[in-house]
Length: 456
Image 1 (cartoon, helix red, strand yellow):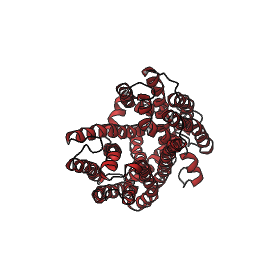
Image 2 (cartoon, rainbow, N blue to C red; image 1 turned 45 degrees about the horizontal axis):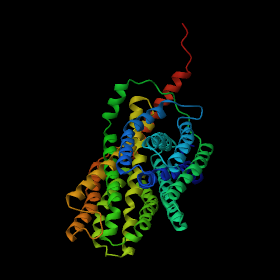
Image 3 (cartoon, one colour; image 1 turned 180 degrees about the vertical axis):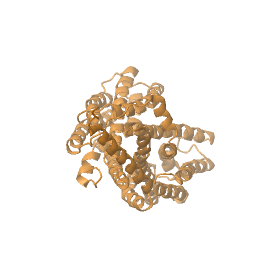
């Protein structure tokens, strides 16, 4: 089964947990900080400090969870038990974090979010690593990751629609009702999605992992050139995406003049990501993954200057621009995750260990770091040019500067991505050779294990 093309039904069953994963990610960044700083009365400084500390904690928990996921297996396999264990932890923490009873303290927020982040890391890394292990085929790995990414992108508009519906209902306590509705969405959908996942998608049998010296394991990772290239590209793509997100409302409101529909049009960005995934996959089957990344990066470098041509107040033109900007999230996340499975093959050949969880934890870490650094750099740059987030408070030259930063950031990042990935050393021929060598070694080890001892 694992070297053949998986059915759409099985891939859908596998990808289901990506929807609540997305539902967890967006509200934590968009709704929870403002909710706890405002209605819950903790204040901006306290909430900002708590969320900053929690984000830095990912530097420890992501690689640690990757190692644990690789090392400790069960009769279910390598990944499913970790995913199942994350469900009760996430359900309880999501309920407490999204449906709090005022008053709350900073310790309340930090405590529940601390364990929620642990459960989220446990679920996300195990699910991504499992996706990489569903198939050894070069192109099938991209198809699997494409399904998973599409479901995650579907989860974003779903969770964005919930607050919009709540707002139309006009409840007495708007912010609390909006956050609570998202919490209930997570609490209900996560167990259902995981149940379908673990019952209908089997794991492949894993070979015993030989012991490896810690220093040798670290040195193997450090000298893995494809890994360094992929992590650098992922950091830059995460930087570009987070930079656009942090400036989008400012650009749409003060420059494009469509602030009243800015949040609704943002959905088109994510729909663009979903629409372009099949296009990107078909292109990767012809050109290879890294060449497709280069093509997408060059497109993402050439297209953003069109933003300067958006007429003020014209939401139709802005809609088309946002749709095509979605190429960034549809292409890079899908192909990077597929390429990481190929990179992990090199490590397995050198060490004899299948450390997929660790490698995917490094990928999630670089994306998070890219996003965190981007917000700081972008806001510092906007402050330097004198931008003020208030209607009518900026000169025409300042708003032009805002647009230049908005356009230049993805252009520069994607030019660098194209340069880094131009000579990426793993294509379909190289990956097939890696799998051939791994299969030969597996057969040799199996023969040695089954061979009876020589009698004197």
